[in-house]
Length: 359
Ligand SMILES: Nc1ncnc2c1ncn2[C@@H]1O[C@H](COP(=O)(O)OP(=O)(O)O)[C@@H](O)[C@H]1O
Ligand SMILES: [Mg+2]
Image (tube, rainbow, N blue to C red):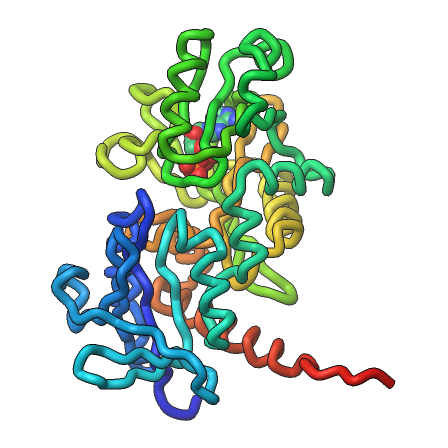
């Protein structure tokens, strides 16, 4: 490779998952292979302001603000700091989770300024972030996913608790359509809980979804690649019985809430089915470079795809890097592979003709 690539690490963001992103970014920063890459730290505050950090432990607000200037001829992300210094980036790794980071909006902005970035593009990011659209697409493609009802907007008043109970059975889940980290999600077993769940969900999102509850094991499968993506063997999340499901607290607050098993102890045939379904789901939702597919496995061995995370957690204990570690890919090699996939994909798209003047 000619010279080291300037890698912009984007982290923080206007999301309820801001803190998680900081943790992931710190790890990516530490493991970034300095023989190929130079990190450039770009923190986004909870209000959405961009800052150029000198140090990963610096608070985002205290760093100089960053402006995006457009119109440069070279594919880059020209950033001008207050002192007038210009930084040219070769590729961006958005280590952002949730709203405005994982949902296609940042990806759209990066695409318009013509800079390569790691992970799914506008379409894959926005589709995977929307639990309703992604479930509809999975269902249409014949990929098993739990039954669901759209409760968005006026539909809430049209669908009674009894109707939902009749269709989905009890308990069922109520979720905001486009959030993550289990924020705003409830398990519902009575009408009273249902009303509370809706109120809770509506605090975070205007779109809501009710979903059939799947009682089973929670498995996760990592995907890497574009033309011929590869699936890892699945891992398992075993949530302590203290929790009703894999809640925000179980994910991030209580270090004893879960046991992560990599690889999950499963029949060889089930492993193959899970990998096959995960790869199909990844393609159907138009994911790129990498993603983590989350699934449920019932006692009767039925598999359901729960959701796809286009920017999964990258902390030391996160499932995504652990799933690749079992296949001999270290954290650092994983980041290198992802950044290579991103630049390769960008170069191959550049070959497309953008002018057409008829025959
Ligand atoms: N249909 C379901 N059946 C059983 N548990 C569910 C279901 N949907 C979600 N959960 C539980 O809620 C957690 C969070 O839901 P998920 O859809 O993955 O949202 P998020 O994007 O916030 O992670 C899951 O990890 C699981 O423990
Ligand atoms: Mg999830």
